[in-house]
Image (cartoon, rainbow, N blue to C red):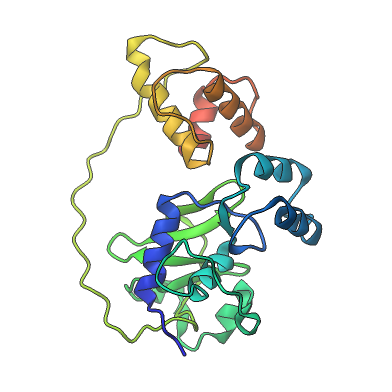
Length: 258
């Protein structure tokens, strides 16, 4: 019996985006241990390269992780209403993203998507959840390099929408609250490097640190470009095919702000 609403699904996914929950292919909200990580690496070697395994060992052990459809199963399998509780595995509903879509009885092409929180979107092999039908914002476990993030519906390659078969869509969705006007903030993309202490660069260094934190680096947002910031930036550059020099120039800024 469906005992969780579509709005609860959307609420949980917003929480996972806010807390930057990491992505590990084949997981569904359990706390990541080294044994679980190595099991998934053996099971899915094309998804978890040795470099990714080493990165996950340093940054994700002890955290709850999901993949795209794993996040949806995680919420469905929660024993209560705590989004960070330990999910109870249900082999009968352990479906892939494509199987979940095939089991949905209410669905359609993405151009006809209802403006309803908790509606799921998909393209072959991947899925996400519409959390803001006013601004058409989706939360998705996008991949290892991204984790759980918010994206604009129109900027991704979604092909279909569907009502997730494990959630209840019969409860009327609350009326959306109009989003206040957001002012555009100009980001000064200065070239930044370790040791920069000029007063006019402090805010740009803070922006750099905040951008890196979105990718799970856990930096203090203090405006000081020290060794930890440089190490995080180099790691980011390596993962994104950039020149690994620890200097935040145009290419690094563009990758961080994508």
